[in-house]
Length: 66
Image 1 (cartoon, rainbow, N blue to C red):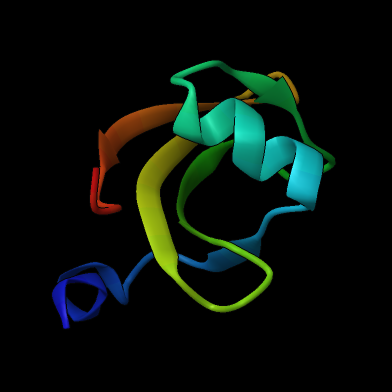
Image 2 (image 1 turned 45 degrees about the vertical axis):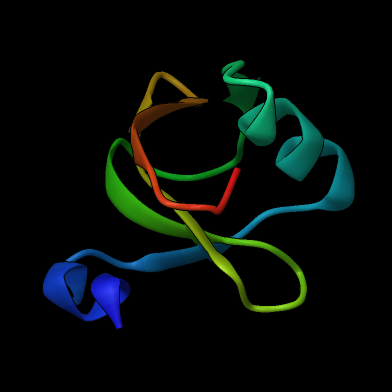
């Protein structure tokens, strides 16, 4: 699976509201330390490689099917 290429980064599971924002290309607030994360839906779908800066998660590269 494509997410295996990013295993060096911690995983984060998004809430339903965060997932909607993610799929629409928007940034959103999170309670995570700054860094790079693998972001997953609540059902376990790999959504994106993301960065967190100052409590805001944004997309580096999305991976869901359009």
